[in-house]
Image (tube, rainbow, N blue to C red; front, side, top):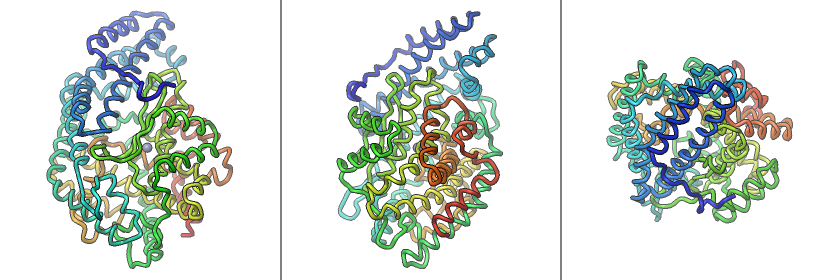
Amino acid sequence: MIHFNELKAPQPSIDDVADESGDILDKIQSSQQLDDVLDSMQQWDRQRREVGTYLALVYLRFTQDTADQQAKAAKDESDAMRPRFTELDNSIKKALVQHPLRTELEQKVGTQMFSLWESEIPTFDPAIAEDLVEESGLESQYTALTASAEFEFNGETHNHSTIGKYREYADRELRHGAEKIKWQWFDEHGEELDDIYDKMVKLRHTMAGKLGFDNYVELGYLKMCRVDYDQQDVARYRQMVQQHVTPLGAVIRQKQAEQLGIGKTMYWDEAVYLKEGNPLPPEDYDTMIQLAQQMFDQLGYGLDDFFKLMTGGGYMDLQSRKGKAGGGYCMSFDTIGMPFIFANFKGTRADVEVFTHEMGHAFQGYASRNQPWLDYLWPTYESCEIHSMGLEFLTYPQMDLFFDDRADEFRRIHLASSLMFLPYGVSVDEFQHRVYEKPEATRSERHAMWKEIEQAYMPFVDYGDLPHAPKGGRWHDKQHIFRSPFYYIDYTLAQTCALQFWIRAEQDRSQAMDDYVALCRRGGEAPFQQLVQSANLISPFEQGCLEEVVRQSRVTLEL
Ligand SMILES: [Zn+2]
């Protein structure tokens, strides 16, 4: 395996790519033999992997240092090229979808690829090429604006990522103070953020119109390639969360307040479950890496060797620093079949989740690297998050390494906060539905929408005297709302599946691990609900699924 520093992904010439795509398209359209079509598909697959690796590397470099002008210029350049690549790919996808040999091709390569393309094709037309470039520009604006934030707090300079560590501090005053400073920033930049978002919403609505949709919702679903469930399924799922998880949420917060010895949990208390503070992992980076290696050695199933490959090959950037974009993600370089993990360590239990969550993604990307087709390397997002959130639960026994005698506390806190995430996650989803259904809404109407939704799913949240958040502004802090429209319900669907992995592992750990690894290997060869069923899990859309998860959780949490 080559070291990350040696990975080269030169900027492709758009003309060369266009020429080669033209040839491939001609060959596909004129081929009457199955093997000839498959040969051309393979050539196209190689080309897409090269372009994809270039795009991934440029994006990674930009987020590693958003102040690096060269990286920014390279990203802008790649953003400008992206629609052209999409257009070229789309013409080939169209030719394959309409091919006279389609049935034979489907027998050979599976039907999922065709379903994905049928979802993707209507989402692009050259008429929106410039709009897409503008959209990436607005997304970069959001990223750069939030990454530029600096807070002086408690004798240290923080950014949006590092200030988050105070959320878990035992000292209530510090927690409160950190939240105040953070939300003060959002209050000061609220108009700017509203402005960016307003432009995004209107632009996305315009694109939907140009493509023949009533609004961006349907387009958003197609762009997410949700091929085996629809808006009605998602709406039903949100209702189930409200019905079963919201009441549990109120009870969790109540018990938490008792444990903290306070009358009521305020927003700044939410992440802390115990008076003496949450259990913390070691802060030292090298120690964390060593413990992670021990964890994967214990876990086995190939995760042990894979983690060595990731550390030895330099395929991780985990420490926070000035100018680095916030958040965490996992991406892949498909020419070499290696993933990369990007994160911002904070000195909280979330750091452990970088190893469990992002490693889940990375492991899947690696486990499915031998899938013959690019479209099957990764599944759609709601399935991707099962690998990551699932591993968070499957590594419960190994949490003793990080938390010693407080590992049990960690597990209970992780379980409680995983459940608490569901009402928040569906709020983020419903907000976007409402926003894009009414694109002409004013900025203050959008804030009112958020407040109303929050009341329905999370009536137990109290922002107290914090700036901005009580005015319906909390969503400003959710980067997905800006950068990845409709990418959020995915986390809640996956969490519902991950919780099932937890329940199953409690019953039979090795069978749960077998199913997990098999699921990872399958990559994206099937749609969400099929993948879920093949891993012996129940689809979150099925009545009773969430109810059972909540029932088991209540037993464990003694609620
Ligand atoms: Zn994830």
